[in-house]
Image 1: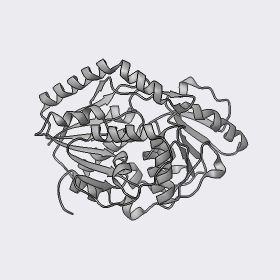
Image 2: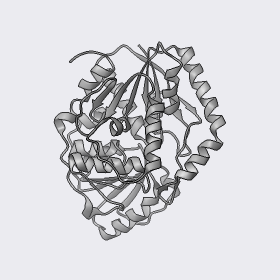
Image 3: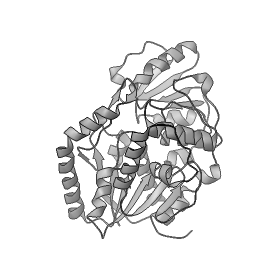
Image 4: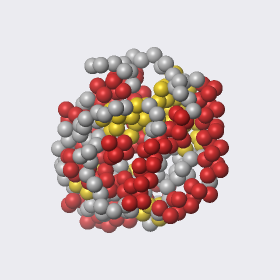
Length: 344
């Protein structure tokens, strides 16, 4: 089976899911090859583990623009409009590679250009992964007030990224499959499932946006005896004089600190919060300001698992979520149906 990967690279979550699916295939002793993985270029670079595992073909894709820790909808729109000609060239490039490689299946982790290519390759099977699909297909998904333009954009992205093929909708709790949509637990990497979590009283912090670092420093000053291990995109751009705060690049030793820490503080993404819940860590989610998807993730995590979220980093706002471990352990069962088309 020849597989091509497409991956949205704004955060590390989709990249981590792609690696986890590869590990799933390895556990099933599947006969497969992955000649190439498409990933949009980012100024901050590609998630290191993704670049290590796959042969990555980087292209000019869509970008989000953040200012002072907030998503700028206007600047995001204009930036992508001005580079539209580059995006069109990238789409043509992606289609040429698909035509050349003749894959049996394409695994798409919420990449809009790879998703759109499904309209032109009728004989290739497409399987699309993303928690964003659960937001639209689960009738019990909690509603977030406001964000009308971003909600519309998400609906459009859901359609563009998965116009044809099976959809694996990642969710904190089960929901009823419908049509081509398979609801699936978070797809976690092997080291999360296999390692027995310990507790060294440290605090792991993952910041998608560096702006929150100032709030972390203020909080760390209040707790000089606690160790804060913070993962950000460009730690070399920051200097922190506090002994109890250490900065690391995303990817390096992240899982090691995650498994051994007491508490996780992260932005409102799906992946890190899921890993923290599975490992039984105290958790605080801090959504990027004016970012609908992150606010929705936080509200959903609170609604389904009792997770806490707050606008700023505050240790006294953490809680111990109660994730449905029986559901979280069924990821392989769903993937067998959605990918290998086997009943289990």
